[in-house]
Image (cartoon, rainbow, N blue to C red; front, side, top):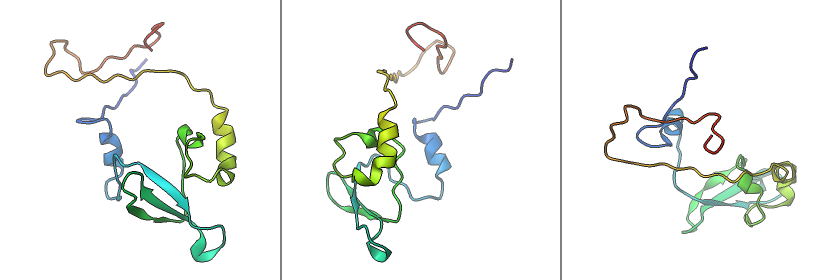
Length: 125
């Protein structure tokens, strides 16, 4: 069987995403809070995003797409629970598995490989 193709973001983990978003305005390393403009039609619809620390405006948008399970967490006071019911209930039912992600940077190795994949290991897989 052919080996699986794996992609590694170099020089950083978000390099693949940056490449896919070429030509699209994107902000990185920014935590945003969302404020609902209103429930009515027309100009009252949509979302206003603000920088979580500075409060500076990040823009106004017609839609807000939540793809991260943590958006369903109760500590997200900026997201209107009623508006997110269709997302929160199924997302809350997804079990979380405790995990540890580790990235180690060294100047130079003599290992002869760039990455290590542990498949089927009882502890590290």
